[in-house]
Image 1 (spheres, rainbow, N blue to C red):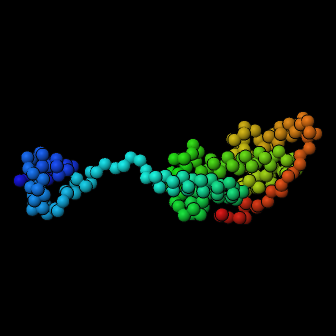
Image 2: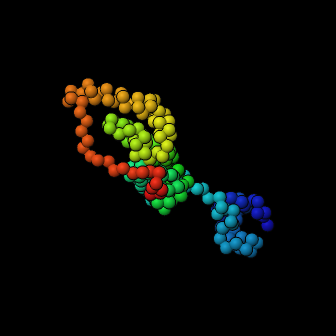
Image 3: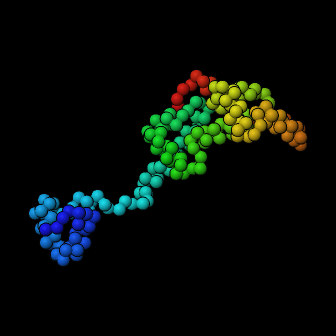
Length: 195
């Protein structure tokens, strides 16, 4: 009789070859000695794992990533978190973080901040809107947090950015007039929790 250690990780054919037995004899020995019907459990446990994801898993993850990007684009004016978006998309926050690391070079928070800063830069090009209102319109309750994030993104304060963009419009050959083509909805982001 042979020991169990001698067959760990071997297929039935490898067991038969190692001990010069026929495949039928191996089945019979396994059944009688180990009370196994087909394959030792160690053989089942050592199957190589697939290294690539299933196609539908990739599609689902990419869909989740795109839906998170849409949520950021729609709701950046509100104080949203990874947990809020994950809950709205019937996912977990960790899964959403994995999706961002798989399909993007940025994190969820960096994506949200970039969207907010792009919208803030557009609003700051309109001199009629105070900086504090711009901060609230893009989802910041505290203007100081907005100023810090804006400076980190663009290297200048929002008021300096506005001064630079206003100077550029005065040199505009169209006369430097700003015409508002759309009225942006005003959200009080400090009062509207969640999505």
